[in-house]
Amino acid sequence: MIGEERPDDGRRAQLLKGVAELALLSLLGEGPQYGLEILERLRSEAGVELAAGTIYPLLHRLERGKLTRAEWRIEDDGARPRKYYALTDLGREELASQLVEWRRLAKSLNAFLDRRRTK
Amino acid sequence: MIAEDPDVGRWLDRLNWALASVPAPEREDIVEETRGHLTESIASGLSPHDALASFGAAETYARKFLDDIELSGALGSQRSGAMLSVLARRVHKSLVAAFGFFLVVVLGGIAFGAALTAIVKIFDPAHAGLWVGPRIFGLGITDDPSHARELLGNWIFPVTALIVALCWILGRMVLLWSLRTLAKAR
Image (cartoon, rainbow over all chains, first blue to last red; front, side, top):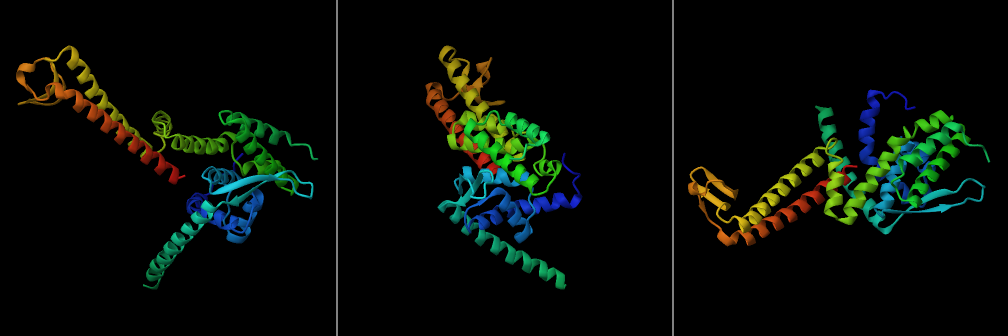
């Protein structure tokens, strides 16, 4: 059922694991969204290619952790009901905290890597 | 309404079955959300095979939810038995779980040994206690008390209560630390 995994896929998956939650929280910071929409926007706007089998357990964990709240909505276009996720106040605090941490880490790591590249 | 692909239907049945231990409303929520995703993906042109491939095996997909539910449920309840049970099920796949479980077992062994010694002291005071001698030092039961001196006497009971309480508190701290570390690493 699952395609053969390339060596790069495992490395990429490890890298993505750390940033997926931050990217997801950041996206939900814009407003309520549903799973497929989140997946497509993360792919097209952030280059974060998560499998469907990864995003829903992550959304579920955030919901159980009260970082998000979810509600089922029926759209006017007659599509199936969709489960929309939105950030809670706790989720917004977590997003702010993860952003600070990510920016600090990215800045120091970039400086570290740049120093070595110029040598 | 487009008829559901038979492979998708079977996969969703397996997911539903694999999530049997999850309370019905939560299980239905997960299955219906997955069904919606698959239906939309297929309607937008993806083949049923590729749509299902993005979720992996139904049992593996279900396991991700079950792990999260077990872990957050045990941490939420703060019950020692539930936390220990969740930790024990992760011993084979996590160093943190293995280390935490080992520490809890050691602490449990110390508490059990101390409690057993105190109980024996009630019925056989000459052979149970805290022994100090040339080749012996420790709380326990000895066959030959002539080779060592017993230090505690009846103080063994409050000392045992203190040891058991300390082991209980430390054991709970280890359980909470282990599960919180596992939760952060998800």
